Figure 1 (tube, rainbow, N blue to C red):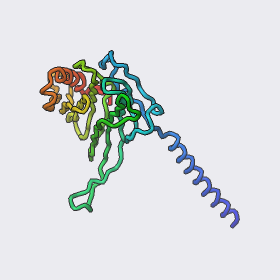
Figure 2: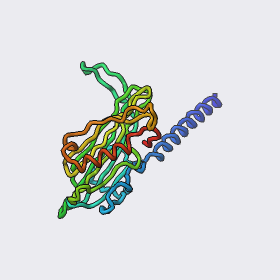
Figure 3: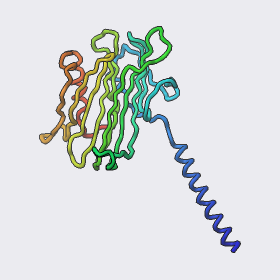
Figure 4: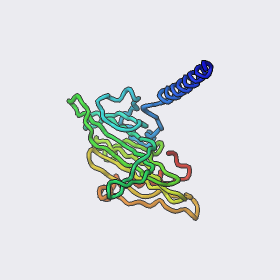
Amino acid sequence: MKSIITLFFITITSITIAQSETHLEKISTLEPDLWLGIWDSANSSTKIKIDTLSYDDIPKTLDFRGTVVEALHWEDALGNNILIQTVTGHFNWKDYEDNGTDYMVQDKAELYAYLFTKKKGESTYQRKWKIYDYTACFGVDWHIGFLAKATTITDIDEDGISEISIPYLVVCRGGMDPSSLKIIMYEDNEKYALRGETMIMCGSEDSYGGDFTMSDTVQNNTSFKNFLVQRWDSTKCEDGMQF
């Protein structure tokens, strides 16, 4: 009987230790940031001094959600700016029906981008704008994320106020359909956007997709329109796309 009790406690202890080790291993691998090389320094302005921030460099007073994949700092005519881009990764989401009771569990992932500005003479940063998007998908192939080496900081109209352009991809499909592609650009609080789809089988006779629509703000600004269309053409091809 004593042998059975001893064996029982050894078994329970072993399970507890194994669970503790697994728990500690999960905790030890958690990271607040995951740098993915989102910033396109080659196509950003050379006249603006842009610095990358580590997670510890981000002021603790800034409120944002998600895992940081890029953080940039620079100064322009409006003050000191910090751009933070984050993603949540995949998680389960309850998609409730209209009755508020029945639901279907779907896969979901979210994406955020924040601009915080500290005006000249002020001591604290204030959030100027936020980009939020998500995919809620019950499909085989699904993803939302920023494109690698695609976010730019520019001053196209040379007015001293920077423009931030952020391309990203939204995928929910079960075949070879194009993905949703968006390029969102801000100058101060003014928003400019191209929205469309990626191109599949680029460079071949059978290529398809790649079309977009533009916001009125883009349509009415020739210099920004030319820049954003060029950025679209350089990022629309999904073949070999990094995301």
